Image (cartoon, rainbow, N blue to C red; front, side, top):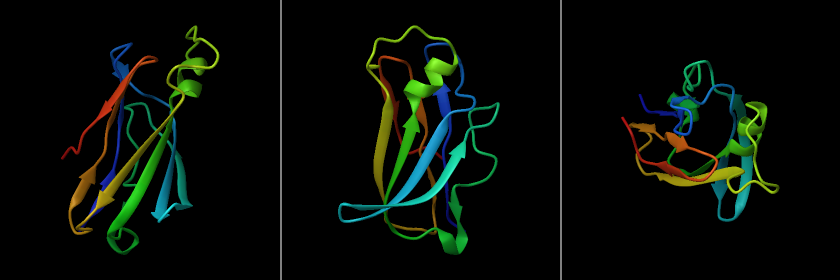
Length: 117
């Protein structure tokens, strides 16, 4: 059964990205449809897959990580506007029978991602 998961690693502090808001969208061309709003747990992960089984289909998705708000909540001194604020990750799912893990490694100054396992 295929599924979509994510997690956040705060590379500036060397900790999981706890309590970060993430929005999940499905895309059809340039039209975006909000599917879910979630928040990471104490381990920087979500308590359940974002999508799985019949709810997970091939197509284009976008995860929007609310990084600026996360660092503000931690009390970080950020410039205004923040250099890294909302991080959109747009990715394609070719085979919804597979596990797609899309993590975010982030600091107030940079971010990276990859397809994990």
